[in-house]
Image (cartoon, each protein chain N blue to C red):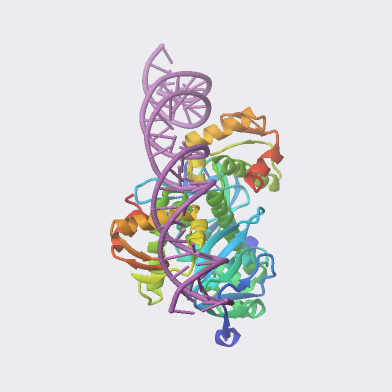
Length: 207
Length: 207
DNA sequence: CGACCGGTTGAGGTGACTCAATGGTCGTGG
DNA sequence: CCACGACCATTGAGTCACCTCAACCGGTCG
């Protein structure tokens, strides 16, 4: 049943917006490949990046609050995704207790993630935040079977800065510092993690 | 059916912990009166306050992530609450599509709230965060029919500081500054808001 | 070749933190 | 009734991390 409801094989180019804040929540999305950024636009017109979406992750969950999406999501790379229209989703929730639990789990996880991020911003300094960001990215990539030590950042420094509540210069300086200390190799957006433990330590706890 | 499932009229004294991180998620709580703080304990043993719970608000939603609570919740004042055991909740979700939507809405709102907080921490300075905190509290109190301009903070400065990613001295200084400028009257935990517009302006946008 | 965009690096300013002292309020016990 | 201590809040002085502004570098595209 679930299989039948999913619309597969859609794709978009980099820069294309998947969902817009304020639009009615017509469907739930899951990214199959590529990556995206989730952000909102403040009253002053600046972007606030709330997070980055990797393969296997869901898009549009905040829409459950009021039937409308609350964030914009736009592709950072060429991106494949599938979508489940809300109509069908509601019908399926009626019949499949397992799916019910799964959706609740997804929402709970999103909440947990938001909470962890809150803790980071509230407690860590710039280097700690950047270290945590890299460690987190690394772990999420590994979970999808990709290399946790060699990867390419699909977002620019300004996006990372917005997400972490810093400036792009500070991001750049933190990366340079990690490079200088031999923890990373950095070439523009290509990252090689040489000492994952060092990052993890800075990123979660023993600052 | 819903009525029958709710266990009513429970109460606890200030300081008592309602749920603990790591415990199996046995029930969903709703606070009827009083207030509570939601926090997690970091590896170093410090508290990170994630939010404050007012009457009419739910406790324990993050538990959906993995069947266990992720935060501690403890009462700041004498507190009345009711609870819905998870067993019953699952049965009800089977039968009541309205309840299903309601739970999803609650989770979506929690996500929205977390996201707004993220924006605050990432973009605003100390005064802006404190102003937003007060404006938000004021609005939530008003929604419950309480005075939006005269209230008593049930949490201490350290809890506010932890929540906003600041120090307690900075909270104190911000409140004193607002007092000096004639926006507030502050006497220990008693707050009178004299110029709500000024707070709202600082708290959301026109910094 | 030149313009542009994203990223790096430097110099200087400042807002928030740290550390420390003072003040207020409440509950307890003399 | 007052003395005392505990706890919370306020205020001040000095430091430091991050921001701001600005110059520079290296690709890429016309």
